[in-house]
Image (tube, rainbow, N blue to C red; front, side, top):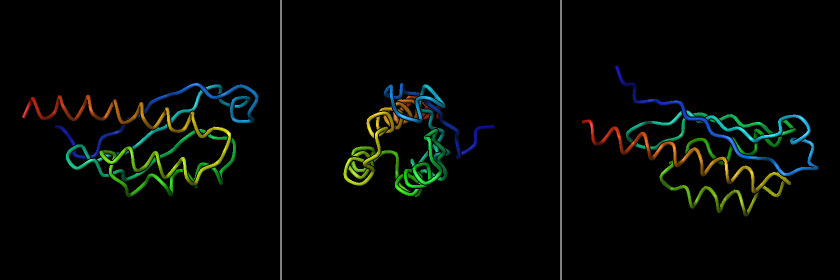
Length: 109
């Protein structure tokens, strides 16, 4: 049985020389997304500090993954951490995975 809430994860390389790269090597992001509407219900990511993880979560959760450009702009404008580009890359990869699932779901209705 297909559920409306789906789990999506993706990875992106972290820049060398930042503390998160010493811990994780790659940035990982996991999202719980509504398959039909694109609403993001929950999110977790690998960053070095809890405050950075929570900050990104506050930007992403409650938004719609279909408005990816607005979410990315919000990250560019407000998250000035050294992993900004990696966070944007991994979020973009999550979006691409969502689109694959969403398109396949629509075709199989």
